[in-house]
Image (cartoon, rainbow, N blue to C red; front, top):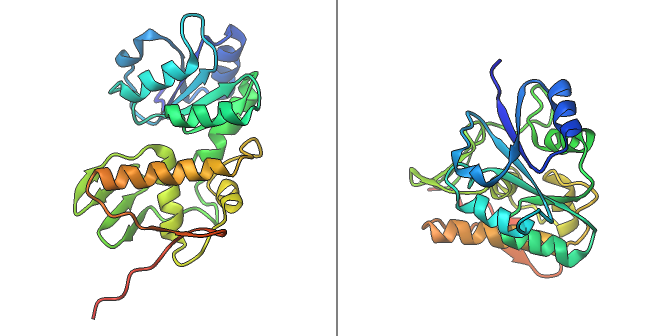
Amino acid sequence: MHHHATVLITAPPAALLRGLRQRRPDLAVAPLDEGVAEVAASGPTWCFVDWLLPDRSGLEMVRTLREARATRDSHITMVLESAEPEDKRRALRAGADDYLVGPLNAERLLERLATYEAKPGAPTAPRQRLSHGELVLDLMAHQVRYQGRLLTLRPNELRLLAYFVQHPDQVFSRAALIERIGKDDEVSDERTVDVWVGRLRRALVAQGAPDPLRTVRSAGYVLDSLPEAN
């Protein structure tokens, strides 16, 4: 069977693996261990990393995943032991895309995947190609190009940029962005949005692309439409 996505989980219980394979046989599900560099995935890769691991911290594992060629562009969810705001911020700073409070089970994991997976035919489904000046987003290929050059953006950064490009000249509060780009109620600290935006801005500027976002004090963020060429 062709697997369109790979799910990697640190120290998964056998019941969790069994439940995922029964409910979603289209997923390639495997334990996430020290051999991350050997992972070969033909589609999107999702990593679920426990806060504490037998021989290292989950934060260290997240950093390793971001450095490994096979997983650096994967979507990483940190599975926290508590809802402490500082733990959430540390997870994002380490390179996680999002987080949830454990324990993890098949139902919660699949709910998180469903939050991001495309829903064909849905009336709110985004266009597959978007552009803002010389920035071109290919949502099907999960790619962003600037002046034809491929840029490296993490999944969260790509979703955030796509949302702003789809809604130019609209100021979005931090709460609205948490709600509208696929996060759930467990993301309650609005400063998380500042981490997302800062990460997106740094990724674009570091690769020679302009920062298209404008901060509106006490209100949120906006992407201004470009003036029409004469």
